[in-house]
Image (cartoon, rainbow, N blue to C red; front, side):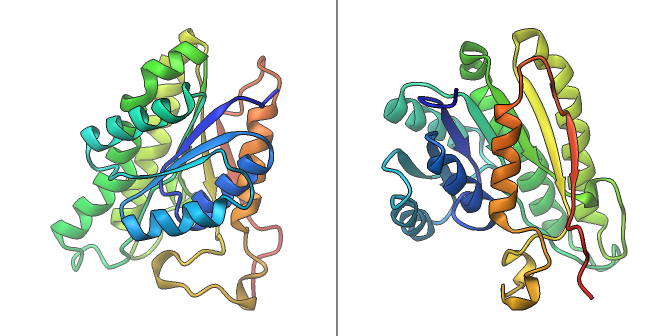
Length: 235
C-alpha cells in the first residue's frame, strides 16, 4: 500500500522529524527531509541511510516560500512524485509576554505557522496529482495556554486552525489533512538534553508510528485532529 510512496518532512534532522523519517523509511516509503543547517542535514542523511537508501537530505528554510519550492523540486527530481507532506519544523521561546521581543515573536510565527503554510503552498499542486496527505505537527500548546507561552501558544493555536481550515479546502481534491498535537516529547527542544529522565515522554519514533498508522488508514476515514500525550506523566 505504501510502497513507491514519497514523503517530504520539514525539520527532519533531529527529534520528531528524524524519528518519523526513520519509521517511514523502515516501512518502504521514500523520504526527503529538510533542515536549515547543511552539516546537520548531511549528518542526518548519513544516519538515515542505514534504514533505506531511498532518502534525500535538503537544505531549506521553511520561512522562505522560494526555499520550500526548491525543496519540493529537489524531491521530485530525486523520486518523481510526492505523496505525503509533514510540516514539522518548529521552535519555541518561552518568556513572559512583556519580556518577549518582536524578533522572538516573529521567529516563532514565521517558522511554526507561516512555515506550515509555505510548505503546503509549495507542495499542494503535487499533492493534487497524487491525492496525497498533508500533516502538521502542532502541540497540546495549540489548545492549552500556559504562563510564558504567549508566542508559542499563538503559533501553535494558529497551526491547528490553519490545518483544520486547509482540510476543508483540500478534501475536494481528495487530499487529506491532519494536525497532530503531541504533549511532552523526548527531544532536545528548548535546550532539553535527552536522558533516562525522559523515558516517560512520547518518543520521536512514537510520533513516526502514529503518522504511519494515519497513512495506513482506510481512505474513507480522516482523523483531522489528534491529541497525543504520554500515558503516565513524569513525576
